[in-house]
Structures are given as C-alpha cells and as structure tokens.
Length: 96
Image (cartoon, rainbow, N blue to C red; front, side, top):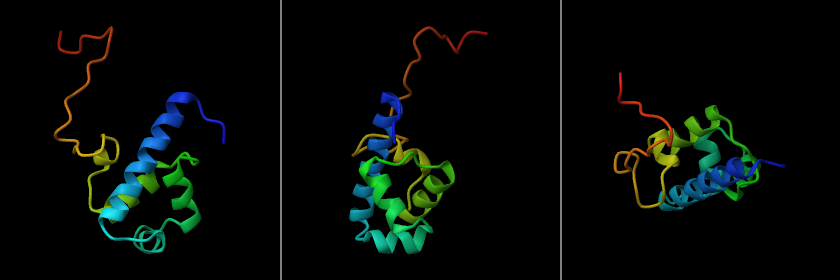
C-alpha cells in the first residue's frame, strides 16, 4: 500500500502502540482478534504499519485493550491526558 509520508508515519506509530498495549495485556494476536473482532491478518498488518486502519477498527481495538482512543495516538509512556496540546502554526484559536 502506497501511503503519503505523514499517513505512513501515523500508521506505523499506531501499529507499534497497539502491539505494545497488546503485549502489556498478555494477549496474542488471536486473543486480541477474539476480543476486538478484527481478524488476525488485519491485526498483523496494523501492527506492522502496512494497513491504513479504519476508525471503527481503532475504536474496537481501544475498547479491547482497555484504553481510550486518544491513547493510541500519543507516544509510548504517555497517556492522552498527559500530552500537552500542540500549537498549530499560523492559527490563533483563542482570539475572538
């Protein structure tokens, strides 16, 4: 699958995070498959960063891994609540 560089980076990051959380829960790919409803081949592709994962699949995986969806998007060792809000260059969202 040919993804643009930003999408590829996010796909790889999310896959690594899912693998990390799965192993921390002591789950195999088969076990996570049974809990989340995603197939083993799909999970394997997601964890390797070779599949652009659908939002509905991410929601199921977050639920199965007992984390909030935003926690799949933050760096390892952080939760979404611990992550500071990034600034967006060129936009001042606080002004009326």
